[in-house]
Length: 342
Image 1: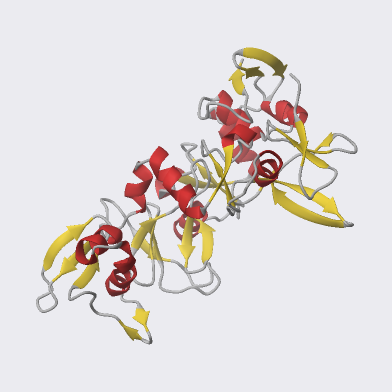
Image 2: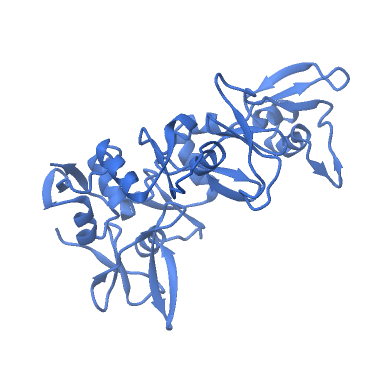
């Protein structure tokens, strides 16, 4: 299949193709991307004897898509951060990105909302429940701009140096998560565990209670290790739960998920392990498929067959996690190609 290589504006001699690969046009060497902590693929470019790191999706968008409105971000249409094919990318504002995510995955809107109660000022009686602060603002003031005042009142935040107790003639209260789930145990997070942060508690069910008493779950992109937020710091949730609850007399360096689900940070699903034990466990439960043959297809036609996903990644420059996800059925394609395990 003939590849369409296009110069990247401002980055001579680098080029991008419509499959989402980047190469040095002078040597025709395809750059192998690395995955950043954000989940996006990135490559290193050289210019004026200096090295620069850039997201692959942004370079591909620069090469293939004009941006007359000067929109600041690049959206992945199918929300696969590893699929950097030109047809999967578009310039967008932050608002457009958020709306696109909610449009494709309506459950995200429900998960991102925090219910709030409108209460009587004198008695504190709860009068009406809203599924989000935005809906409360629209009901009370007829516009979303009032949401900030309601947030301040419900969260006890300071405004001009003092706590704002009411907003628009009412008290406001967030509806909190249950303080304790069946069988759940809470323990304090030691202050030396997260660089001096105090007054946080973690539960055996993988939840966190912050210094204001708010309870929340860990967050993170699908398929990645979720994190807890400690004010301005983020820490992997499974590591925090393990370090607080699980003894580690052998000083093993890693935390293993027994069921293979990275997003399941419950205490019963965690154990300390070595790197070798972690790899063996992944093989035993079928997570490690790097040794399986894999086939690359384009519109149903076979393009190539590889001995492993690792070999396919090395030859094509497509990230191994994307190939694995497509071959496993979690994604429809990777870098514009279909993939099948043999």
